[in-house]
Length: 369
Image 1 (cartoon, rainbow, N blue to C red):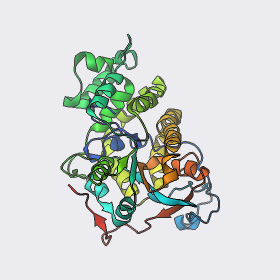
Image 2 (cartoon, rainbow, N blue to C red; image 1 turned 90 degrees about the horizontal axis):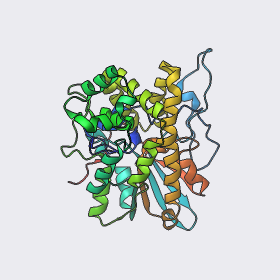
Image 3 (cartoon, one colour; image 1 turned 90 degrees about the vertical axis):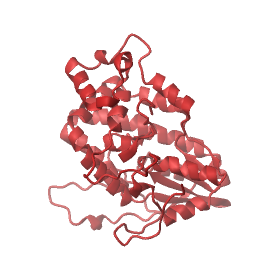
Image 4 (cartoon, helix red, strand yellow; image 1 turned 135 degrees about the vertical axis):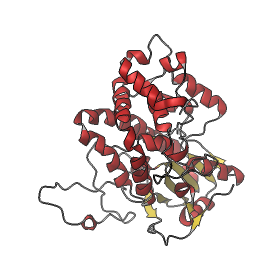
């Protein structure tokens, strides 16, 4: 999350966003399709050490455990989407975990988020893609040597890919040269079907991250991106080819469940439950242990490694304060997540925006047109 104009998706996965960052299309795009790819953290959860700057999630809230269940330490920073960063002598900054989606339930900013945004002078999104960047990604999504999709997938799988992509499938030589990760992004593109609870979009196709960038430009805020297009491409290319192929096959096998997974993903995000988001992705490894290592590779390259780079890029900007960091929510939690890395830089991390979601929820602010 976040990658290909050929798919028009790439801010993430973001999903894959949810992990990576590819700018997904309506309905959650990447996030929808690979609803577990980036979210799936296969490592053990890390317990949150006692801290006056972060309220631990009560273990008892989940109810008594069954005798056969093993206790798992709570995920570090597993609750919340908006966090305040404080350090003596520096104005505060904020970190907001986004969902790369244009679902109107996602793009309506809660007043707490809008207030934090208003207090900042700098926006730090994951990535920004111009037309030239999309051309670069389009080229990078294809093998530049003698290899092709036919070297990775058998004829039956290639036929299934074409069928799943339908009219959006590239033709001829372009399709033959696609890398598996590009196929993955294309598969993640298909919007949920109408009538199954998915949002219909904002009408413009702008995902939440893009809306925040537009709002920052309108307010003449500085915008500093945390990742360059070639760096994101390198993250995708670093995923072992065998893992790319395995995840493509898995997504093909469960295409019929993606609408349901989209709804679960959006609901977990609206509940500000990062632990639940991560748990959604863990299902792939439970269904087939052989897939666990492949999803672990996706998580390592598209989430953990990129989170470390984001923390590095934020080191100097955060010293001036008043920075609004907006990155895919799956980059926030965990011992290797962005919040833990920023805490290691000396910032006190305080979760804000604890209001419960529900019919009586108030204070939503629609983004300006």
